[in-house]
Image (cartoon, rainbow, N blue to C red; front, side, top):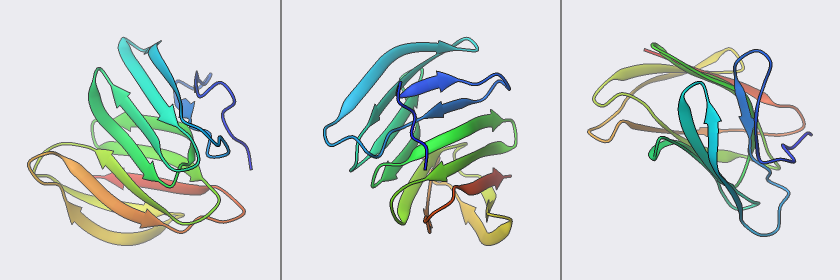
Length: 135
């Protein structure tokens, strides 16, 4: 499994990668600029959290490593890995229905509330899981 040693990085394909679930104590990186946005990450073994322009974007409990995270008008897509199953929450549009695919398997439609947060569990193991969330 690969962690993001620098906590947050821009990839050559326009996506971002972040998080290090192997850290014993919380570390953070502020003011990371990417495509006109300002990102902030906090990560360690217990939690990984990403904010964009001071707004909630991603959180996992316990901590995870996320690679190739990409937002689009229709949702988000990323790969996630960690030492075990994770509860993931993403910030999306308020009061909107989404379909969630984990490794190509549809885990069902879900609706965001007033805050626009969507929470789901991902079984993690030896390989990264691919997550796609679409309207």
